[in-house]
Amino acid sequence: MDKPQNNNRGFEENTMAILDSSGIKDSRDIHDDRVSFLEAVRSTSLASDSPSAPSWNMYDAIFKILRDGESLELAMASYQILSDLDKYLRVYLTNSGGTDELVIVKEKFSALIEDMAQAVNSLDVQEGMKAVRNMLLFQYLVNVLEADFIPRHTLYKESLNWVLFRESVLNMILGSRKVNFKSLVRDCMSLVLKRCRHNMRNSLQDLKVVKESGKSTNDSDVSLVNAIPELQRRTCSAVQKLFTLIMGLDDIRKEADLLGATSRIDGFRSPALEIILDELTYNINHVSPFLEVFAEPKWKLEIILQYFSKYCLKHSVRTRRSNDAPKDLTLEGVLNYFSSTMSTKSILKKITSEVVQVLLAHAFQACLSLKHDPDHIHDSTEKIGATLLQICNNIISAFQNLRKIDDLNLLGCPCYMVFEQEGPEFEYSRPLCHQNENLPFNSSPCVGPQTWNLELTSFEKEALFTAAIISSQKLGTEG
Image (cartoon, rainbow, N blue to C red; front, side, top):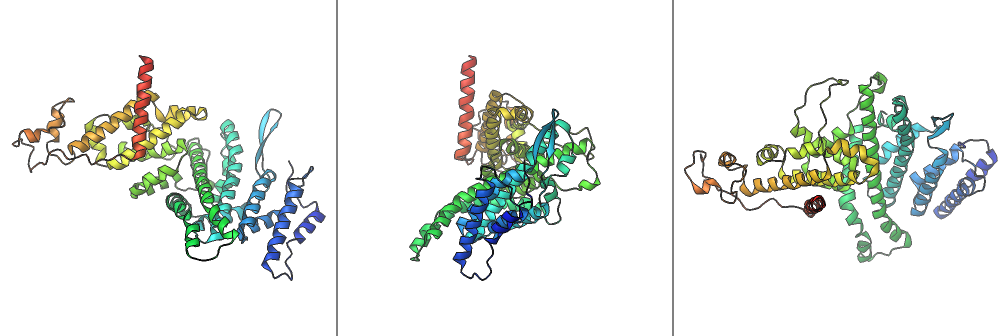
């Protein structure tokens, strides 16, 4: 594979001369020159029968057009060419004598680090082309990180060589002083929560607002308004991809720590998963919208399990490289905490029933995705811990216990202990405090059972319905 070189000086000089704007004042002429430059690069480096790799100066010029361009046409064209030119830049694997080797093409990592930090910090800018440029820049940089990450991960699984990731672009970016890692994660979460879930709907109204304002519109205004919703959707996907890459790197770093492969030069930072959990814990209104958007099943389930583990498990103090780490919580283990009204009541003292329902429904969705994806067989076995039929039955049982507690208002009823003494077949529609007002547990007037206040969202109803259908089908098959 060829690398960007400066060996074709004539080609570079002729192509770069197209961008020479000396004496040109008209913005349209500058725009046309940039379009011609991009077409020349595509013709020579991509469409030719014998393509020639662009020089670094040409590559940087394309990058600058993306970063500073003032039209949607230039932004999209430069983004597409940069994406197509990845074959000259990315890290790749080669087989030599039956052994896979990593080939690293020289790249200007310092520029990537600076541009990534700038792109993330600027993603919330709302003005027209600035928003478009920043979204495209962010998407491109995430694609670069993924292209560098995947071959390293493939080789790491064979060698467990931490150095492969110590030298990765992602690790260097996250360890750079130019990037505030916690702010990076929080900014990306904010983008998912605010823009991808709410602002996308708003942008669909932009064209209508422009038309109703009586202002004249041109083709570029209409194209920009029409392009933004799709760009926002793709940016949300890029944010999820970035989260997945970072959490994957953190997982590998954790394994390297246990193997004693890391050292002081690797530094230290909080894992992304911990920051995400902290944000969701202290802002419970963000739990549902974040999980609605975050679709990667392996890490969605991991986020949910770690969320429950903060309230379900007793964590022991251990050193960073301790080999006696506690066993990770599985989905089966979580559902066991909701297998009875007593254990469910204990958890609901720490987490609201609304949050529990959201977490369980999304955990079940992730479980179904993992169970039906052959690439995640190991993850499904390790993180789920039970058969699909058992999970379905336990999901149904968990929601039934949540409803019983809400229906009986057990958390506020001083007669709750009496119910538990009556065994599993108590008649929960008529609490004992209504039958005997002189029970010793009634230190204050008891209002008895309350109306059904715990409502299910359409997503939670769908999850419960799906669990019931799968359970009935499997039971019918076994019968």
